[in-house]
Image (cartoon, rainbow, N blue to C red; front, top):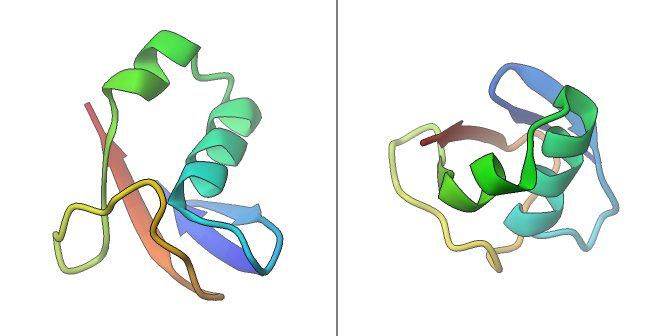
Length: 65
């Protein structure tokens, strides 16, 4: 499935959660582990997401520090 993280489309497995999407984004964009640990993840409505929350195809995430 495809999700968008900070305007970057990431392909992840169907059963993936927010953590998998953020890590895939970090690897693709060469974001350091230290920066990933500081990130907070929000959905399009501005609701903060738990890292274990499941995702659906087409979800849009925003990671901020």
